[in-house]
Each structure stands twice: as structure tokens, then as C-alpha cells.
Length: 201
Image (cartoon, rainbow, N blue to C red; front, side, top):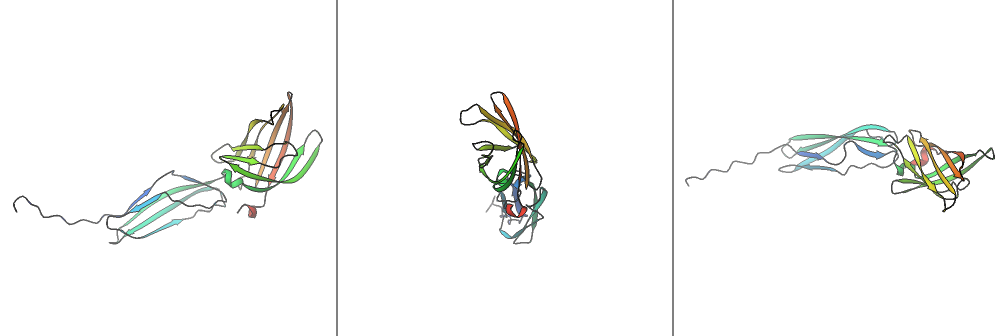
């Protein structure tokens, strides 16, 4: 018929790989890693997909994942995502050996403490040899090599506590300095937290 054009055949195109979300994507040291923010599609379907990566979540650092896709006609595509293994609050959860120093008594005590996570805060449960209430810690940097203890008033009393600390990059040792304030008198305590690397897995 006049004016009608014969339909052109569909032409195959390479697969499409869309990497959504953060790039680099941050994951916690000692935590399981899964990237569920990648979408792969093909005009006539996908024959196979696979990934290549060297991610080691027991070591801090930068890594990369390469995603591959092949269509049924053999056309290929690839895309990359960077992954940054850092210390996250959940990385700190678990049991720790503690050595705490009491300057007024010139005394060092050792005990076992447990760390939990509430939202984005690390909760210290058993530091009751120094302070009778839970202490909340916040990680202070993207590299997570430091922590910060928010100023906290204990049980509506005259006590207040604040401080700072450092985390070694393997996340198995943490040194905290507490400033306990009572009636304008400040006492500085130190607590060293450590754990065997096997217990973090």
C-alpha cells in the first residue's frame, strides 16, 4: 500500500549494566559483603553474567569489582564499582579484653567488656569499674581511625564524661581516654580494648 514502509528488523545492542548507589561503596571490616545495587539488562535477554574482584574484608583499603554481561548474540559489556573497606560500628561488636587505668588509685584493672551497636553508635556495656552507666562512642572519620565520646551526664548526677580514642587499622585494638568531671574536678582515665583477630570473624 502506498505510504507504508516495511518494518526494519530489530537490531541487537550490547547489554546495559547500571551501577547504582554509592561509588565507592563502603563496607565494614570483618563484615560480609554483598552488592545488591547493580542492574543488568539486554534487549533480547542476557546469556551470562559474572564478576571479578579482589575484595578482602579482613583488610582495610580500596578494592574494585568488575561486572561482566554477555547477551545471547554474544555482545558483551562491563562496568566497575570501587569498594572501600572501613571500620564501621558493627565491626566493633563483640567481646573485648580491657585494661583500665585508675589514676587516683594508681591501679590497673583487667576485665572483659562487650560492645553493642545502637543506630550508628557503639555502646560500651561493662565499663562499670569506672563509670556506672553505658557509654556511647561515635566513629569520627571516614577512615575510622579515631573515635569520639560524646559528653554524657550520668544518671542526672554531677558526673559528666567525655573523651576521645584511636582504633588501630585492623580494628582489634582501641585506646580510649575518658575525662570524668565531678564538681569541676576532672579525672582522666585510660582504657585499652583489645581482641584476637579470630574473634572478629
